[in-house]
Image (cartoon, each protein chain N blue to C red):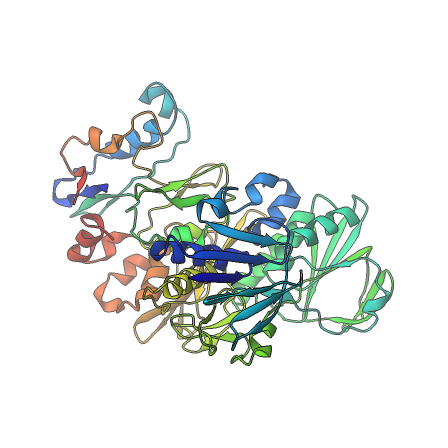
Length: 408
Length: 143
C-alpha cells in the first residue's frame, strides 16, 4: 500500500498515527510545502515573544518521520492531482503514485483588495514561521505597527509584538473582538485588557485608503505606521481537489470518514468543511483539535480501518496578555450569566448546553465542553451546581462510578 | 494498564491525597519542606458535598481529548497508556482544560498545565496518593 499525504502539519501527524495503528508496512510519503519538520503554527507568536525556544516549536521529535517509516519531501509543493491515474505531480518535477491520498493543505491568509495597499512597503501576514521571522526582522523598538483584523491571529500578533515595537493599532470592521466567539460583554473585557496593555483598538471601521506610511479609516481617523500586518482571515486551500474535479464548498467536502468525492482521496484539517454537530450545519472549523482528529480518522480509514468523525464543533482557548479566553459550541438559545470570578456565560437550548464563553474563570471547563459534546440532558445533572462550579459531584453516582471506577 | 480508581464510599475527605501528590511531585525531601509556607498544587483534587466526597485525577483515557487539542505537543500518550506532560513545552493556552471531560487538568502557579502522571515520572514510581490514603478509597490496579 502506498500512502501520499499532502501537507505536513497537524492533520498529517494525525493521519500518520491513524495509518500506523493499522498498517506498519505501507509506504508513507509526506509532501510539505514548508522546509521545516512539523511545527505548531499557534506557537509562532510565543516564539517571537521568546516564550518558546526554537526547538520547542516542533510538534514532534526529529525521529517522528523515521520512527513511523515516512519519507518526508519537505520544501516540495504538490501542483496537481490526477485522480484517474492516481498520481500527484510535484514542484520538483516528479510524479508520485498513490493508492490512498490525503489532502491536508491547510488554509492561507486571505488578503482582501484594499485601496492603496500596493503603496505600503512593509506588510506581512502572520501565519507561518517564515512570516513570523520576516515580521520580526522588519520591526524595531521605534516601529509603529497597524494590524488589520482582531481575530485570534491579529490578537496573538499584537501580544507578541508589544515588547518588540513602539506602538500597535488594531483595526477591525466588526463591532466586536472575535465576533464569532464572544458576546459584547466578553469582547469588551478583552478590548479593555488590550487597551490596558497599550494597544489601540479601533472597531467597526476599516481602511479606506493606504498611503506609504499611513492609513485613512472609514471613520475618518488617520493611523501612522511603519509596518502593516494583514490578519483579516484565512481561506481553505481547496484548489488541488477542486482542479481534480472533487466536490468543494467553502472547504473541501468530506464525509464522516473524511473521504472526498474523489475515489481514494481523503482530506482533513483547515482545508475541509466539517459537519458541526452543535451548529448543525457544514462549516470550516479550521481548529487544531479538528485537524488532528480529522487526520487521524482519515488515516484509520485509509489503512482499512473504520472510524467516523461525527463529533466536531468549535472550541477555542487562549491566553492573551494574562487573560484567559475560552469558548465552545454556539451562542444559541438562552444565555445564562453566572456568578464568576471573571465572566461566564452559558447557552442553553432544548435543555442542552449549546455553548459557553468564559473569561478567566476556566477551571475544569472541560466538563462543560463534555456536556455540549455528549448532548447531555441537563435534567439528568445538577445544573445549578455546575453553573457555579463544574465538577463530577453534579452527576449521578452511576455516571461518576463509570468515570472514576472504570476505563474511559 | 494500571490506573488509579476511586471508591467514593470509603473517602473520608481528609485531603491527604492532595498533600501527597504535591509532595511527590515537588522534588523536596519531605512533605514539610514541600508544602509549608509555599504555594502548592495537586494533580488530584477532592470534591465534596455534605453527603459525599471523592478524589478526581486524570483517567488516562484510551483516546485522550487533551492530547488532540494540545498545541505544543506537551501532552502525549505514552507507550504504557499513561498520558504524560512535558511541562517545559507547555505555554499555558489551557486547551487541555477546555477538553478534559472530567476536569482533571489543573494549572500550577506558573499557569502551566499540571496533571497526574501516576508518579511514573518522579522518584516514587507509583502513585503516592494511593500509598498515603488512610482508608483505601483510592487504589492503583488493573481493571
